[in-house]
Image 1 (tube, rainbow, N blue to C red):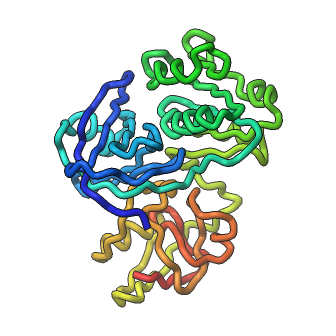
Image 2: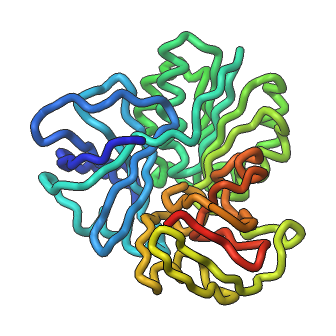
Length: 315
C-alpha cells in the first residue's frame, strides 16, 4: 500500500493557459520513493477533497515529485483551489505513487497525448528515450498557448524526428488519429487525453492501445441493469441502509455516517474501492480488470451498483 506523507509545495510554475506545475518536496529534505512512468499521486485538498494528478517529472529525481494541474472549467474545487489558493511553502498530504497506467513493453512505441494528457505521457517519453527505444509522440491541442511542456519535448527531440505537435487552430481541426496509428501498425500505443480521443485510439488500434482516462464515459445501457434501489449491509459497523435510484452507494454511505475515501467520483481513480462480502455488484468503473469483475470481490462505490437485491460490504 503506498505510503501517505506530508510534502511541501516548493515551487509553482505556470506552464500554459490554465496549467500550473507543482513541485513537491519532503520538508526534512529526505529522499522520496522512486516511481514508474504513468504513476500518479493522490493529494488531499481542503474541504475533504482528494484529487489524483499524474507524476510528470523525472522518475530518477528522488528529491522532488512534480505534477501539473489543469484548471477545469467545471472544477468542483480541486484544480480551482490549486490555481487560486495553493502557495509555495504550503504543506499537503500526499499518497502514492500509485500505478494504474504502466508503460507496456514493446519493440516500438507510439505515444498520443491530448491537452493535459501529456502529464503521464511525458514521463513515458523520457523513459523510452533513456532506454534508447524506438518511440514517437503525437501531442494534440487547440492552440500552442494551451499546451504544457513543449520546450521539454523539444529538448527530448532536438532534431524533430520523434515528436509531432498538432494544433487544431493551425490545421483546421483535430488530428487524423486513424492515419497516425496506421503509420505505425505494430507499435504499442499509450494514450491519455479527452474521451473522444481515447475512444478513437481504442477503435483504431484494438489489442495494442493502452489508455488512461481523466473522466469516465457514460455507462453502456446494454451492459447495465435498471437503476433500481437495493439494500447495503456494512458488516463491520453493522449499519444497514437503502440505496435509492439515482443515489450512489458512496452518497448513501456518507449519509449514514460511514466514511469512505473518494476522489474522482467517476469510477476512474480507484480511491473508493471497497471489499464485497456478499451479493453481486454491477460494475460501472474503469479501474477493475475483467478478472476482478468476474470474481466480484470488490467494487467502486462512487459509481457501481448492485445486480442483487442486497450487498454486504466490509465496512
